[in-house]
Image (cartoon, rainbow, N blue to C red; front, side, top):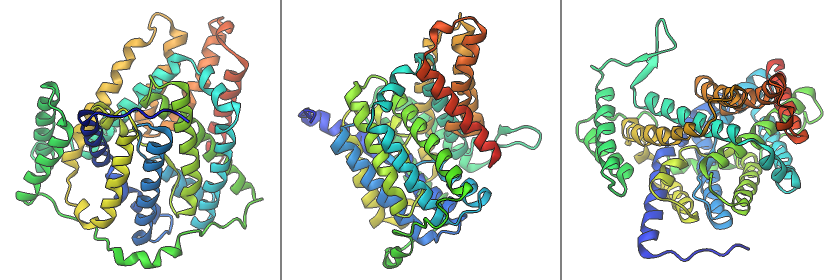
Amino acid sequence: MFQRKKLSKEELKREILAGTTSFFAISYIIMVNTVILAEAGMPKELTIFGTIFISIIGSILMGLVADAPIVLTTGMGVNSFFTYTLVFSLGLTWQQALAVSFCAGIVYLLVAFTKLSKLFAEVVPETLKTGITVGIGFFLVLIGLEKGHLILRGEHTFLQLASLSNHLTLLTLFSLILTVFLFVKGVQGSFFIGIVVVTLIANIMGMVTPTEHFSLGALGNYSNIFLQLDFSSFFSKNFLLGVFALSMILIFESMGLLKGLMPEADEQKYLRAYRVTGFVTLLSGIFGTSPTVAAAESATGIEEGGKTGVTSITSGIFFFLALLALPLLSYIPDSALAPAIIITGFLMIQQIKTLHFDDFSEYFPAMLMIVLIPFTMNISDGMAFGFVAYPMTKWIAGKKADLSLPLWLISGLFLIYLIVNVLI
């Protein structure tokens, strides 16, 4: 068992502030995940409880077992896979999709508790790890810009700048200027202060209109999604394809996220965090929600100084408080949250300076990740193209010595993942 460092009062204060910031940066997942799962046919008024419960369990376990400042919650991208691939494309019911999630969690744990996890972590080249970190950074910037109503889908282009006459766009610009000022001046809690100030201003000016109303009274019907896993189609082709594809996503996306969020963590801390992630993923199907991953927005708390499990435990406590104050969450405008996400993304992008731009075979696969992760809005797909491109580019460049058998295996699995995605 690891030795937990005793924190000073100042350090404890910083960790709590970091956990608070991480929670508010990711709090949108409570509403968004509920909406996405509702499209799969799950009752919206109940899936919100599954999302909150698994986030409480995941974040607190991450703090207690791994002592890592990582928030575990239902993953964006993974929840879309749950609804649009497992249910819509493969034709599974949401109960069968929960069973797929459970089985994928078992596969994940088989990797996490064997030498495969260490092997996979060691053979992944630094250039690909950098590509994952920078790609996630751009992904966060794009999410922040979209949440803040600064960009929108263009009529003749993919994206375009939002109209500056939009009051929400102006609110985000004010929020961004305020947060950048506080951050550059080194004010402790700059992200959190920005969120609080802009939330108060937005509500005083009547710029927030809650669209969803949830009540704790619906908790009495939670058994309608809890333990509702359906294994009746276990031996069907579509069920097994779903398990394979989801396992690939969870195993390698979690690895990439944890490496990206904790680049300086020692091997044991990373391994504990990786195993906790797998265990909570297994529980997600039982609790009636899509699989969990390490939230990329955890980086906001890490930038606020979060270094230990106190950060994630604090976030877990806030998820519990969110359960008691569901109606209040809808009063926090996206414009207040967007700057923390945008700034954190830019801080992660700084790692691009470590790429070897004098060697095309090194930076090309990483750049594929960096471009495709944000443009596809899918971390797993972006990672897959980078992992497939790396050995291919090295082989063509005549640098076979840079390749190992395990790396070929990982790249082969990602190639199968991409093919399976096409087939389903």
